[in-house]
Length: 77
Image (cartoon, rainbow, N blue to C red; front, side, top):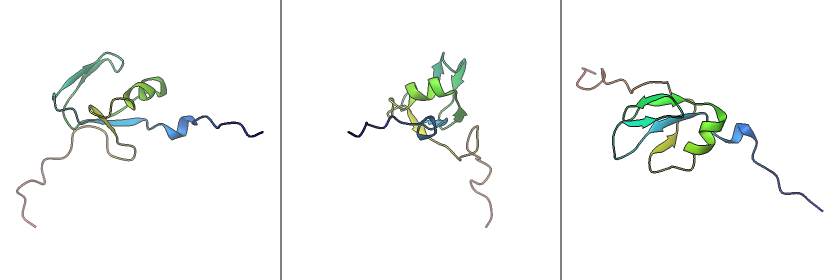
């Protein structure tokens, strides 16, 4: 009889982007306010909570941490 596989810790992202329509979010589990579009790295236990809030947080593994670069707006190409 085959057992159901449980998700491995690698399957849960450890970086999230604040995509909430509410803007900046105070996240006690992270210990600070996360700005709109900011990418933060979180512990596995916090990631397990954020993954269930897609209206507020999107997986962002591999993206640079912090706020997106706004210096490219209006620059010459």
